[in-house]
Amino acid sequence: MNADAELLNFIYQNSQMGVETVNQLLPMTDNESFANHLKEELEEYTQIHEEAKELLNQHGLKEKEIGAMEKVMAYLTIDMKTFVDKSASHMAEMLIRGGTMGVIDCIKRIGQYEGEAQKDIVDLMKKLLKIEENHIERLKKVL
Image: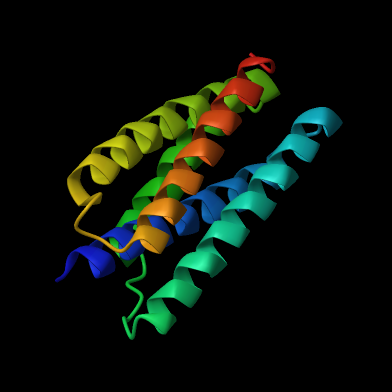
């Protein structure tokens, strides 16, 4: 697979996981401020996901969905971690941990593909990185 396809599919899958995670957590919270934050995250992940899909199509590439097993494992992990503690603080901590892994992956992929992948694709990756970093900063206030 070429650099464009690899990077775009990473963005596509990362944003898809963000959408699915937020959709799973949103009904669990009764904290209005935290729910509003989650809705903003959902909008941003959805936008990035659509942009990645559009770029994949523009470049004649096929989008790769997250695997069924990975989806189930993520769902079950969230379910288990929120079974006892559904507080906004606990969910924010979970999102910060996941977001930090996302930031690390973004930085590594930018370093790996910058200069190899097309500029518009690398720029979208950098946009995803900024969104992830911004989410973490805002979530720190919920802890």
